[in-house]
Image (cartoon, rainbow, N blue to C red; front, side, top):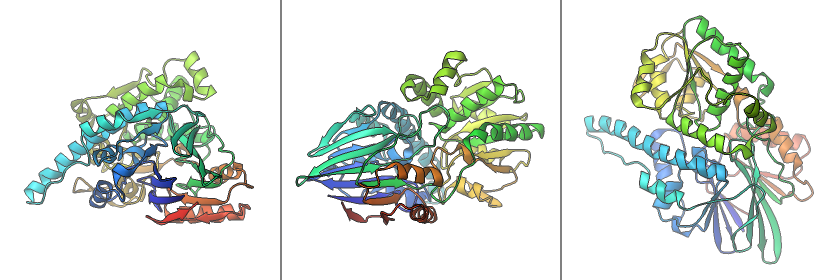
Length: 465
């Protein structure tokens, strides 16, 4: 048996790992790589294996950097099952269609420029029909429900506490009369985060593949996130500006909306409109309402005692393009929450182009921004930012609130890894992190006494288990 590390290796996007055992090939995640546009397009278009030879896909959650290349996998010949939790399946049903639509719109925009320069036109990675085919291959699995996915391989999902439906994957493998367990964290969430349950310990495994997004950082306490959000909105409103929040449509947007509903209930925010400018976020909020099995006790109590936190009276969901464009002409204070989360596409890019040069405005960063993305350039506060090929001066205030992160920080990752049975655990592979974060997590694990073989694979590397 071996594991080949093919994506989210020394970076945080394009999660994809291939397990070969008993003649079967099992793919853990199939995410889109995000970064420089030309490099991302080529990396996502070509798979480093024959798609038709994959026997099963285990999907950790619905975020595009973990699920976004599934339709392309199917387009290239994959015909097997795609296993996921019910909530993940429902979220993918809207997110993958949205991904295909955004690709078509963005490529249409880019091709207009190519035509003017007599450059070759490009095609989207996949179509709406490819998404339809991919969705027909999903099989839903409940948390804690073991499923035979290949000869001698049984899979079980545990709650990862990252977004709705996110899962830690455990594979129980029998090979040549020997039994081994492999654990894959996917993206690991934080304890006491709003809405969803805390991550479940995985127990006993021989090999653990762990994310390390914030392996070298400590987040601000969750308990202060609502106060921080309130402060930014009040200060920006007082100077007559807009708060622009790039946000993942699934998970982060619902979390922010939930906290805003509490702040309005408590009378702590000025009377200004809140716009959620993302059709995907609107649909995702509907799916959140369907999957209360993922909610923590606090959220369930809130639902029973209050109005719908995803639909309070100052909240305006924006669906049409025309409605979105009208937001650009607003002169009074407001909050605009829009996707995509890393600012690599979607309506948020247009809002940034419209607001980034006004010092009254605030760009509020509430999520991870990968290297070479527009969001990362804003976080780095580069004085000039290129958007759609045009240079804009960064005059707006940039505020980063890492308490909103849906990823475990260094202490939380170390604590989770320490809950694994240390007598049985033999190897740890650190993925889904930039190299400086991975190295810091590796050092911290050794410092606290995790005396296991800790590996930092490179792209394409195979490891025997």
